[in-house]
Image (cartoon, rainbow, N blue to C red; front, side):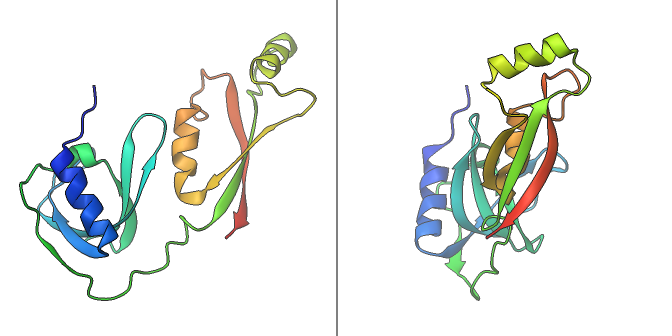
Length: 161
């Protein structure tokens, strides 16, 4: 069971609502435990499995998604005033449309079964609109990059802001 520490979440939330930066120590999948770093939290989001924090990373000079469960527990995290307004989050404020179809290597009978299962009706594709920043999570959740899945991503269309 994934259980987030309520103290960590409360501090992240207060920093977000107060438009303040907060110093965290984060354990990432790629690099392991990091040195303390400053982030500026802007949004919580949920992908159907886990809650993420979207934040401006001063270390990476980019918006990143963090799993609060991987943020080291501290009684009182350091906060500070934001030194300047945050850059516009283009990926969060842009929409994309994902065109999803039955896998192209399925037989006609298998493709017909998949169309029934997912409610394609007479359509050739299922269309999902989401924020560009969240498209990765949709692809992963629907397993559209898995060769053994029944569906695949045909294309992604940028819709703008």
